[in-house]
Image 1 (cartoon, rainbow, N blue to C red):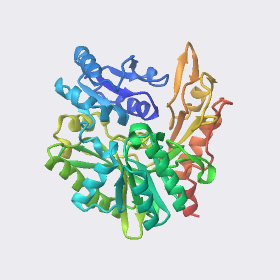
Image 2 (image 1 turned 90 degrees about the horizontal axis):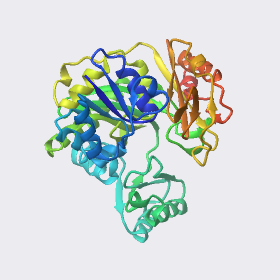
Image 3 (image 1 turned 30 degrees about the horizontal axis):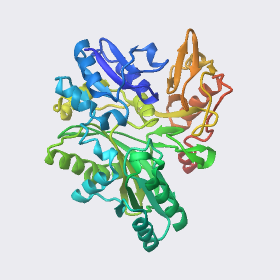
Image 4 (image 1 turned 180 degrees about the horizontal axis):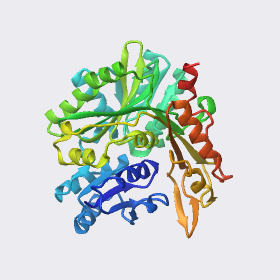
Length: 425
């Protein structure tokens, strides 16, 4: 079948890399794609956030499956438009995508099924929010209710910081995403990511990972979209994983079906591993980026049947999910200045040399081609990913590949996986 992927980042390159390996994939198309994806797929100028345009193009091109990478097209209703044309789509409806596009909705669903999560309150009025913060104290968490490109969360160490965050968000710092705020109890513990896929009724676990959000070594610097990740994440034990599936993921999927908005796609549960067990931090309605990269490196099963079953709304429970025994790690190379302002159009060399290791892949995140040259075209630019028999080996292999890339305008963290590796010392 012909398959269309929507998106143009590292996550979409990893999905394209895995999908292209499937004997079920005839032609692979990506909109808009990037320089790395262009080596695997036909990249086209199609706006993923314009549902009618995507659906019309997919129908006219005879696409058999649409795979949505980012959250914004899902919130805009691209899956609804594609399904209305009779085309299977991997990704939830706009209503089901509210599990990411509305923090309030997520909390309401969690409360409805008794899923363990932080106590919370929602506010549209800054004075009322500040008064409530005064009664709760700090540390405390302030979140813009809507989609804010991963930037609308402040973990405030003091009441003053929390009040400032409220004023910023309700004052328009995140546009309509901050028209209301959700204020949450601070949860102590370590974070981990659990991924599951669903066809609307059946649910299958699809791996665990940990990422590194801060820009610099030692978890210093500003928050980013993610500077690296590894999988599996041993801190999330099989027992904890099953606990989270039983008390959070499966009940939420069942509740969405009960409400008449079945969830079809991947559900990414950000978890806080507390003394009382896993608690829900947030849901994302798409694969994490860069977690997707390490999951795809470890997944041995053909991905396409899993995506298709979710998209068609049946048959997922009969499909096995097999994994390579090895661990995987990815290191993000970002443009100097990220997540602030940064340059574009800088030449990057050495990618082919980095990929001379058969267990290393350089996934492109923010690149474009200019003839034979690869140029930087974003904040997070490359995801250098590798497998190894152990996490230590995967990390070492990824960093050897990083060292082969020649791009003076980029930077990366040097401690991806260090917390887990130090646990073993």
